[in-house]
Structure formats: structure tokens, C-alpha cells
Length: 117
Image (cartoon, rainbow, N blue to C red; front, side, top):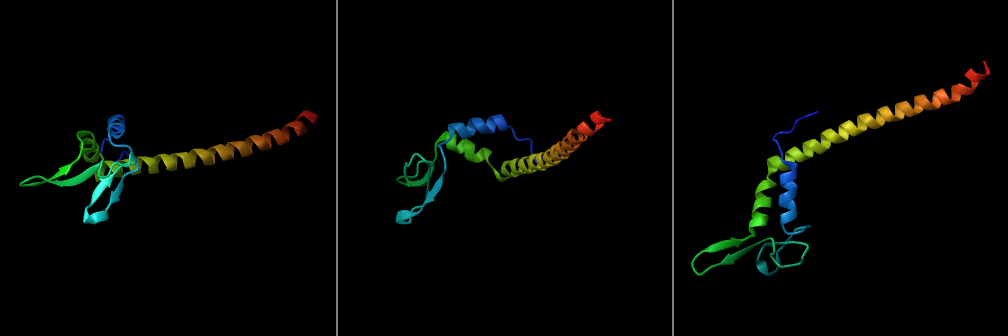
């Protein structure tokens, strides 16, 4: 089983996900303004651009900033690798379980014949 490309702290990632704006998140593009909105329906509630008097800025809550930074491609790739490793392990265990069920069925079928002898 692969160990993944990074040591992902699942509890910390879950804490950050719980603190972030609830998903699913969707990009909204109406009025030629791109913004990221959450399941709460607040327009640009996750991430949106704003123009101050002399500089542009991005509005993003500290919780969403932390979650976005934590869910970088390395972390997502590591989580995908973990899922793939666990799926392969589950497939092996299911195959072994099926083999054992077949063996048990064969033993049960043979048991009456053995008792008769």
C-alpha cells in the first residue's frame, strides 16, 4: 500500500472543511464578474473580487482561506491515492471473503455425506 505523497492530517483537514462555507461551491459568472458562491446561496460568499478606492482585493473569510490553502493539489492527490489504496485493499478482502464463502458452502455440502459414513 502506498503511503501517499504527503502526510495529510485528516483531522485537521476535516476541521478546516467544517469551518469553511458549506458546499457545494459553484462559480457564478453573471454580470461579467467571477465569484465563488456556497450552498448558503450568498452571492460570492466564498470568494469574490472587490475594488477599494485605490486597489483591487479579494474577499474571502479566514476560514475559507485556510481551507483553500489546505486543499492544495498535493493534499488532494494524496487523498486520492489513499482512496485508491483502500479500494484495492477492499477488492482483495472481498475476493478473499468470496473464496471463504465458497469454501464454507462446499464444507456444508460435504458435511451430510461425512456424517453418513
